[in-house]
Image (cartoon, rainbow, N blue to C red; front, top):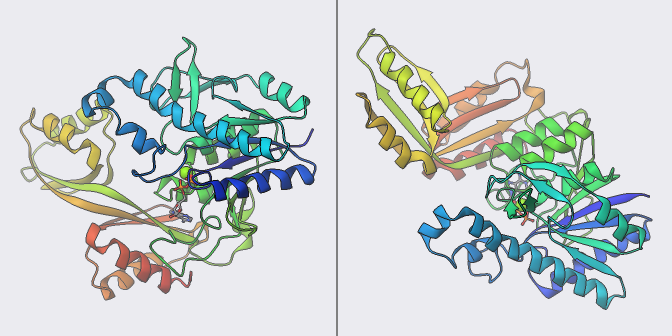
Length: 400
Ligand code: ADP
Ligand code: MG
């Protein structure tokens, strides 16, 4: 049995015309001799689209949303469930028998960490039975069921994860992630018009893209596919482009030092000041308190008289509360963006950081901080510089 998992994102299932294209992709897979297992997201992406996840969220009060996580997860499950039934209808109209399944019905068992549940086990027997009857299972992405029987969700954007983990457990030949762009591009095409398609990329490099803000694929999907050596392909529902192939060898196909550029908005740069050469007790205490409260920090620089680091904007209020409990002075810059320059071939090549800094300075971008690893360089800038910075770097490194 040659199984292929095909995942269709929110924009791919948002209108009748697009759902017809979805059915064509499923038909094509069948024609090639595959047994498709389909995973779908909720219809639409924007808040004004009636069944999109954000719209569903807006149906309940803020307080309920923050406190009644079990209920909110049940509400959010509805979006993907609707899509699964509607895609089955489109298939039905083409004489293809299909069965819609919730995540739980598809055998995805999770813990009960609502809104960000972890998958504990997968029972593929129902999917396999449906396939053996010659039907197409159409599974609601982004969701599972806890051992206690409550509906859960796996985190925003996690339909990709549903597809990948099912691909692993079904021993699929490949997982196709269909979206509204041609594949993984050198930068977000909504920001850089000249962004080009990356035809082949390896798991580690694409993980950096996913982890550092490129929405196009979920990091957990990449992680699980890598562990199982399962090939992924990101493709456009709207055309027949080959998309991006993701496997272990991708990086070998390119000669460019830089593969692409991503960014993460909503970073806050914090500066805490200490008395010079005084014991850093308070600072260490702060780090412990942040860790205990699951506030992660990065871009950490420690000087004699001050320390600088960044947190996510969503943690700012909590941070203020916590730092208020200890005697330490601080200031912050709220609207920052972390720009991430990714390239596994920059390893051991001198001068990349210098070129990045020169490019940014020549574009009048003020760089607040930098950090680097063997394969990635990060620059912290104020949000107002984000687009200029990405465009300038994209051009300078010949990615267009
Ligand atoms: P879906 O609903 O299909 O899951 P997403 O919105 O999650 O789609 O992801 C697709 C979007 O990711 C694209 O529309 C694009 O704007 C954005 N994106 C950000 N960075 C990149 C990148 N490097 N390559 C491709 N798309 C990117
Ligand atoms: Mg997505």
